[in-house]
Length: 562
Image (cartoon, rainbow, N blue to C red):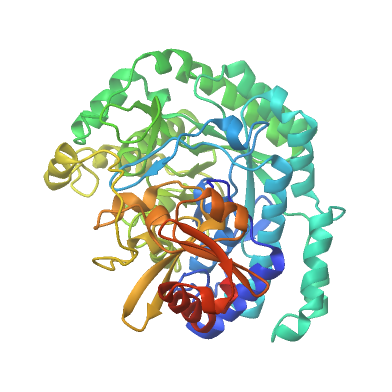
């Protein structure tokens, strides 16, 4: 199989979300769909934000249909996957690349698509979310925000590829994909109950008015300032820069992690020397705040980037990995404490460093917003966690400004140390000490011994589906949407590797031939299939009995997959 994703065509996205909702009450396997009715929504970047919560740039915001699933679950601030001049195989991402079975580690850090292809995915998602909001009355179609993210140096950002990506999302009106999506929706008007021609024609081409700047670990301060200055002055876009936990210094980071039970996480001093220093960051931020004010824009910081740590127990393949989730929260909230105090609460802050159900209300109450998450969505409840988080902020009062509460943030930072809700529990530590690294163990059967369904929920790409067969349920893997991030295998109770061991629906014959998975592809009336070690082509009557059962079940239960 291939680890290169095949984006879903726009019309298929729309038809699937409508048909799946009509048949199952779900949207891309999101069963808990959030409906928002707020008269006092927040305002930021000149846009309306129904709920101050959403998705951080990462695996959930790379494909259009993933973003639709995020929105359906309750995300209203959608930070799109970071793009740069490198993409695809150039990134050299070892697979598997994500592991979120407690704190989260990853080795993926940028969009796997070229910037123009990534832009097309975001345009498709923009239209789909607008239509979804209107058709199913999930909230104000103008109540969510797309926030673009670029990196990692000024030279790369100024290239034609990345520069046109930025311009295209600031105004997509003349882009072929924008016109294509509009044309598709107009042709589908009979399929809608609440979407009409006027609504479609009125969808704004101004997809992004704000930017989160992601910079490499070790990026020089003058480079960070030059990029932010370029974005504010030349692109005239609201800009936040993502800060690193290394602002705290080696000793403080080591001490905090030790106090929280993460003493086994190892890292060197070198990154603290090369990363932005706090004495460099403060005057730089002040200058950028003043520049943004002169330009009539908003400048702020996002807290925080992931934290580079050492691979010492084969948690993932590669040379280094990046930590996020619960272990990152105590570091991020301490960075917030330092910066809020330094700017007397006047520095706008968004948050992504380990937000969850235990802290999201307190973070928002302290004036830190929007709040975005990733790790909690990679855990067994999947996007149901987004539904829960959005529900927690449903009744939160509207913020009239972007000021932060220094005292409240200080209390959060001081209170996290030793807090049982955030420490590495003894049980979790015992499990970690005994844990096996990437197991690489295959299941000989395509049937699950225990159908836990974890692989369905934890997949950011929505690549696994449940099928009911006459003698029990199975998992169907959808190859074209999978990039082999590997998160599913760490939650499998078999153990197995779901994206390799389950019957697979392929998008093309080439991908089936390149794979070792059992499964099939349907082209017209011809099936090309693999069963055991045999690859063959024929009609329905030629399929092995198990594949016939699978095909029959797909036609009835999930026809939109074919």
